Length: 255
Image (cartoon, rainbow, N blue to C red):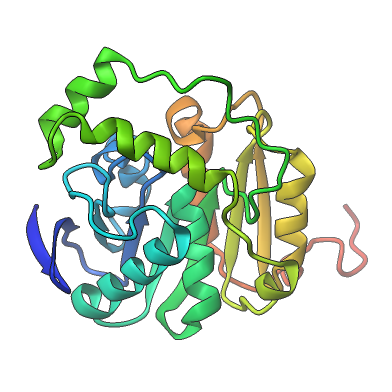
């Protein structure tokens, strides 16, 4: 775990070495890579060489010009894959991280082996309920002060910028999603802050997509229902065959 120079910007990067394909963790909005350590890392660290980084204005990485717009975050992810990982990788992203994973696959399919996107909307107009007034708690401020290289008052700027961006981004189309040919697992809780049909539309647009709905779970499935999510993640990697090939009803059986 250390800062790296990612094309001129000091970026917090982590690696969990293991024998296997590379896998890049993409944390959620207003979150950090270390928030995946407890609930997501156990699902992948034994079979992949896991990478992660705190995106600009997140966790231990400071702000810079253009921060938080999704095109910016997509291009930052592409830079990390090219410069640090050095080739195609599996992507596992939550919320904003899932959005970025899909956007990378649309722009640079050559860099993506597979995607798991949890709690992910593909457009801003998804029936999102972001709540009313933005409340920044003392816990939020203490965590920011502990992690970020920026001054404490920067947190207010970052959070308000995030909410501003979420009102108009992302803007992927179903046609663009239809160009993603790698295996993609869409995982949502049954109580997401967006319309449940939105996740189904995303899944159906993907030529090689799978869909899992976690019962009794809000947006943070990895925190609330890790005992259900982790086996689903592992099963996805165990069975990467295209959708329909493992359907037990594809031929007549005695079952």
